[in-house]
Length: 282
Image 1: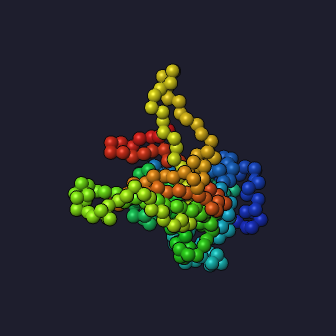
Image 2: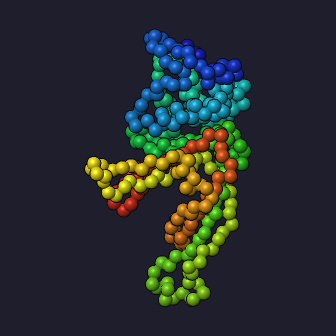
Image 3: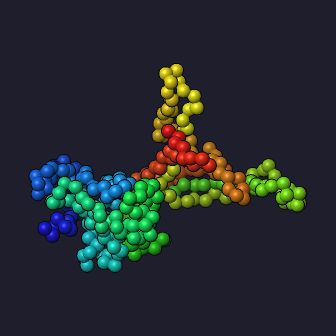
């Protein structure tokens, strides 16, 4: 009973997880494959379920949480937050072969996330999965008692670096600024080049091509299909500029990946906001 409530793993058991094909059985005789187990949907918590399944198959990230029981005094993380304890417990239950049922309920983890986020990620409200991913990694890193500068296995599998080169041009807010400003202060057509700097990242945003404006001969839309490598090359090859307009200036940024992470997380930007609605690109 204690093992079902709080499973534990040895180094040899963790090393065999990626090669395991044997089915386990719960107390009702239902078969399931450890690591590919269902999670209860507690009213619009499918975003957390997707994120937990994705993180549970990142090998170094998974092994860290399976081998360290945060509630044990020998783990070295006895002063960690309750969120880190509940997260590790859910991951251990997902990979355990001795569960009571063939599904896992992340109720305690969902409640702790709602409390720690100030109900930003709450039951009954479907949230953006990428926002939850960034917030959860940050809270787990801090919950282990680590600061920003200290590296941990929470960020290390997803951490990469990208070089950003920015060109800026000052914007004119209105005709009054043109009348009152001096000739030397007025913006020019020339771009001012800033120094390139390296920025760490845990995920990359990829812009999808927009839907076609006109229908084809059959009355439907031909959705453009591009290889993933081509989509990444268009933005992160270090040659193509991306435009960004702020209140003060018009910026053009060029990105070049200098170091790839062990596990690359991509965010497909499918929706664009305008003054009227939230439009889907594909």
